[in-house]
Length: 79
Image (cartoon, rainbow, N blue to C red; front, side, top):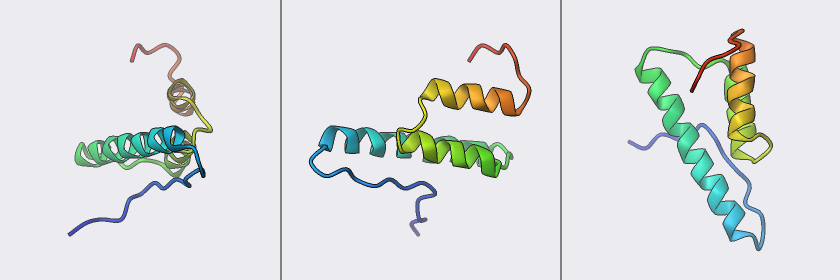
């Protein structure tokens, strides 16, 4: 049974390289959230919203990390 993806992206006409990057980011976020669930964590709505923004290219991976740290009041953690 195939589950519907949690994240989506809109393809950009005539820009296959960005579409591929968006697809890769989407698959990475799907895996990250699945890992969190397997480990017994429930991702917050804010985190999932940030993940979708990352998939869309609105946030960088560094932005995503910084926002997650700020959300949990983590100041200096090496990732």
